[in-house]
Image (spheres, rainbow, N blue to C red):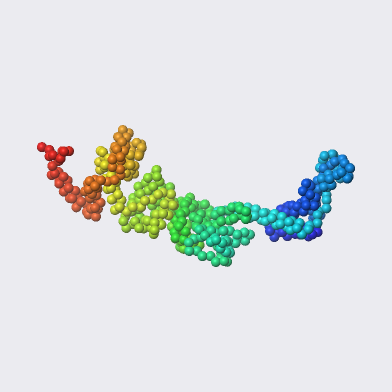
Length: 473
């Protein structure tokens, strides 16, 4: 290959592969060195440099300057000082001087080796360029063409390289054929022995957020912010949005005129339902919004365990929980709180049971048991394990001594009873005003008051007994 052809090849490969000329020249120099090393021996010190003026690769053999008879010289490693000074007048003994030598003729094997070296260099350069290009696009949406399926994973042609859309990152029910356009979220870019590997996702919550960013100018401009996303791909999603401008409604901005913006996202996600709710820094308000369209009656919050007990009317229970628990599950993911949905009737029964259990602690009346339950303590064990400071927050036990005493009595009761409700206590609980109030909740206040009055008169007419069971005189 003459100089003109070599220069033309360098320019052509550089342009076609978008690789810098320096990388191609470096590959050619390395290939030349490998061929020269075979000719001059493994101990020869060689350097190859591309001459931009002549368009050739110059090869230099470095020799040690010695003073010796010509027949005693090691030709590939040594040079006589007289000859050396003809090349460089200032050289001294023991110096090393580069002598330009003829480039070796490539045999068939040498040419094949040189070709492999050049291809490897070019391939490595291409991989580096691809990695540098896509590592900066990580977290963006990219589009490609579906080519084939390998081990259940869809291979997407992006032009210069391929990306992998794993089977688990495809929305359930989606089927792609070769040639289909595929849009996905660039989840990760990693290096491997095969070069850069690009992993895509269509199920990531970040993909949903990115789609809204494309469709909603207010999000792109930073006026509206997506705080949180929760998805069950292909079924339903919830996103929480907030506006930094009082005059901009974040929910309305995401929905768009006649729902055009949200419909564009739904269409891309193959009909996935999307709930857009306003974000709030008030956890209770945020949870109420997240559980919509269900109406919440009351919320009891346990900040220490980040848990909320949410009461709904009986006819709202199925709506709050959702199909196969979908609504409450997504709301929990969105808010970051553990949510316990309970109907009014079930909560009333639970209240009666817990109050009955807590009354087993010596000295704890029904009123105090209710106060303990309202503080978030729902068992004797929880009461016995609670710190004195926590117990002091219960109405009636603000004094440290009283709180410590209650803790001791709770520990004794837990050793004796555990958290079970004895039959006698169950009977008492079922006849208590609380239970009566639950059972009679559908009656009017007058009927309930009359029944309680009859109960009180009945108790008043019953003679009291001493601990031994004998009547008092």
